Length: 70
Image (tube, rainbow, N blue to C red; front, side, top):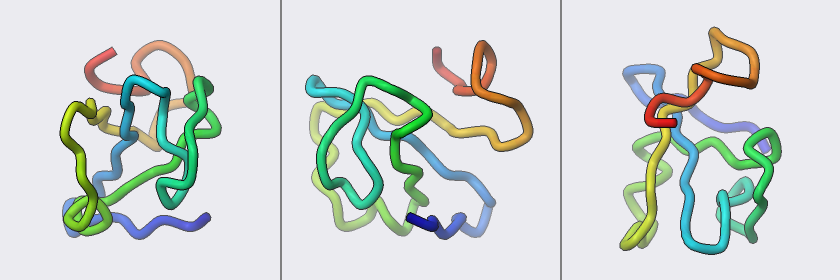
C-alpha cells in the first residue's frame, strides 16, 4: 500500500496490544518491516485509544534508530 506523507513529511507506525497495524489498518503483525505507514491525515479518522505511535524515518535502514521512541 502506498502511503501519503503528511505536510511535514512524517509518517508513523501504529502499535496496539495485538501488534503493529498492517497497511490500511487491516490486521496486525509483530514485524516492523511489514507494518503500515500512516500520515497524520490517515490517522485522523482512526480510533487510536491505547495505541502507541512511532515516527517512521525513511532516511535510515531498518534497525536501531529507525523508529523514534524505541
